[in-house]
Amino acid sequence: MSIGYLLSQGFVQRAVLAAALLGVGCGLLSFFVVQRRLAFMGHGIAHSMVAGVGIGVLLSWPVFWPALAVAVLVAVGVGWIAKRDQVSEDSAIGITLSAALAVGLVLVSLKQGYVTNLEAYLFGSLVTVLPADFFGLAILVGVIAAAVLLWWRVLLLFAFDPEGAAVAGYPVEMIRYGLLLSLALTVAVAMKIVGILLVGAFLVIPASAAGFWSTRPARVVTLSVLFALAASLAGILFSIAVNSPAGASVVLMLMLLFLAGRILGPYRK
Amino acid sequence: MSTMPVIEVEHLSFAYGEHRVLEDVSLSVQAGEFLGVIGPNGGGKTTLLRILLGLETHYAGRVRVFGEEPARGVAWRRRVGVVPQHRDLPPRFPICARELAEMGTFVRGLRLSRTERRARGEEALALVGAAVYAERPLRQLSGGQRQRIFLARALAARPDLLLLDEPTVGVDLEGQDLLLEWIARWKRERGMTVILISHDIGVIAPLVDKLACLNIQLHFHDRPDRLTGEAIQRAYGCPAEVLFHSAHSVPHVVLKEHRHP
Image (cartoon, rainbow over all chains, first blue to last red; front, side, top):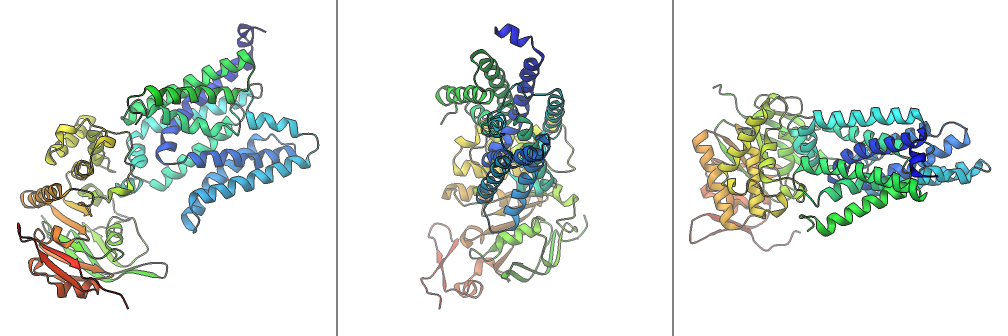
């Protein structure tokens, strides 16, 4: 099958557009993930979704909703535990991540004959992007983009100095949970395309790579979005051309951009 | 101008769980005053500041900043500039000095156009002599230069009250003198109220109107320039010694070698 033929197919077009949207959303979030040190949180939320997939598989529900519920629970729960108790945030994430993963794997094993299909969620797949997913993603990315544009100054201050933002009178707790919630939603939506194992990279690499090229926040965010968008499109096309997993192909492209920045960027040191 | 005190603290007590940090602290700062707060590490200096800024709310007693309860009030936030301990801020954040100074105008209810914000940021940079490196990225600035930019950020909203938490840490001696000279000048020329927290009394004693030693409880000293080792001993509970530099007669307090029983 030629690429031209594949690109004329509805499901491929949907996947390409979904990947592009996801690139924009992750590129925007990536700046805040990197600056607020939420990289591990992104991975934790993603891996925990296996528990949601397990619930969905066992009860023969669509896995998206339980996965989303787990993602939101983990994102908000970890932040809450780390704030209240004597557990550091990375330990709280580490514990939650493994526990949820274990629960998910056990649940899936209870359902006979399903093990192979788990791969679609772990590694992502183009064929699983449904029209409804696409619209959900479009709304989510639209909301994230609007929030960043509308509240840029407040979010910038929050990213740099959350306590300073609180003193300045901004609702820092709401911003923190809003960020975690967007993270959970994005990761849940990205699960189908990029896969649980690799979606974390999508939240860390774009802004990290952009940081090699500029020391201005607005430019770093813009570059981060452009990098994520370019890597998504290139990765998806690559995956169609050589029939490689979509998520892995996108992450490879992101890695190339990161390395290019590390070697050539003016702010690599 | 009303004669309402800028800061009123009455019978303030605070504890982290079982750990008592502040006990029955009372304090009043009038407009235009320069208050220095010294004390040992763990003596509650930063906690007091956090309460004044509305970041800690579970305290006993009465606290007012420009007549408002800090955690609830909004109007006071436009009148206060803060220089926090900058070790908590990400040193590699992608931002240049000018943008960072401009951030000082990001205060709820402070409505300014983009040009006005930029002008305020540049004005503040000029005040701290940092206009020359306005476009330089934060990560390329030295400790002293960074502290100037944080000071500029605190000044960008043109505050009536300036709060500084250990502003001279990580700044070389020459830079320290300059920083304090400016603060004293703004206080004089603009009638700015200043509260400066430091563990090093030598840094602030010659500049302040009032000096308080905070070690869970607060002790006032009417004549900061006469602060003696004995007074320090009462506040710190540790034997201290006041040294005088030959160049300028700024007393430098050093804790004597001692063991706690």
